[in-house]
Length: 464
Image 1 (cartoon, rainbow, N blue to C red):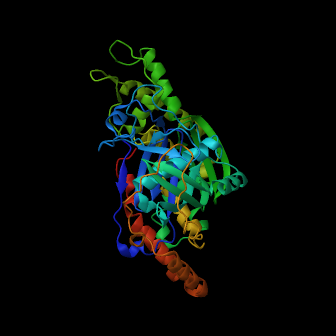
Image 2: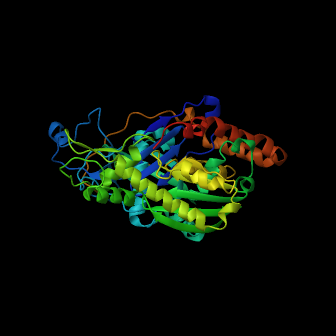
Image 3: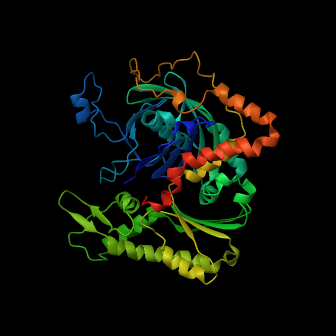
């Protein structure tokens, strides 16, 4: 299952925080989230909220009841007429038409669906974990975003960043919020994982040049492609699509099953690629690949999946053998799912002939994006926080009556110092340049070391 993990940090470390950063590792079917004391992976799909369900029948005034076991949050973005449910930890329906996606955000970065996708994620988070945001006024929140994307022109990314830094209104479970995205940084996922791979060294106050030094190869299996990006001293040298990704892998499993490969009983069921994808990303390492058809029938696809994974590993190795520069690599990183689409042992046997080895990371951990955001914004003063003052959300034109007021709100001083105090600290740092690296930066890295203590050991635990 997609899982949520919490980090307990002490009050002393919290007081150093400069800004609230939310890091997102986006894709068509899953999104990884890392924030202050928070790590999670959610499904990217959504379902439309219908009025003809049991929750509405049991509710009053055509408002749904909320069961303790409810899944996802009801979200209505400003300007939209259709309320959706988003935030699933796994697929709860096996019907092919039960869910919809916002499209492939890595292929259509910056379009309207992309922006809706990002706003939907933030709407879910502001209801689920308010502490990830800075509270500006009642039910008004702000944050900065660091988003992992596909390898693109940095000029193009800069323009999209300006477009995403915006303010929007949303209604979540009947509560009206306004969210302001203060700053946005888009970073290629392959570049972000280099920061993640050096996370144990960041507290040593290494400069960005030192972190990115050398020739690094990054392989990533995402929803639609297995890619290889190579960086030399932080400069992108080459970007290659090696083969298809996870969703296409799921389609291959469906096709092999329908052709009666493997040991499975009759009848042959009409499997959906989305359900098989969900099975692939939620199965733990070394566990069998079993899909549930109904209450009495399951299908063991382990033999078929292993055959497809072997074929994928062979394609990976073929690419490694064809790349003449990989022998000079200082580091080889692989972003993969928990079950392992690429056989790490087989790959290392091939790399060992060149005196190399690989390191494997979770392909939906947004930690690298979060670390990059911390480093990128650590010297920049926080954006003005007075834009929400004396301003309450206005009613949105979607037919809702007076929105319910959210009562629960954590005291902001428990998580971060006031803006004025932060600005004062930054001013002192400017005046004491000779002590900058020994005091200010050291404090920030000390915060990161404590704040991300749980995440640093993330690779040692099973993850999706």
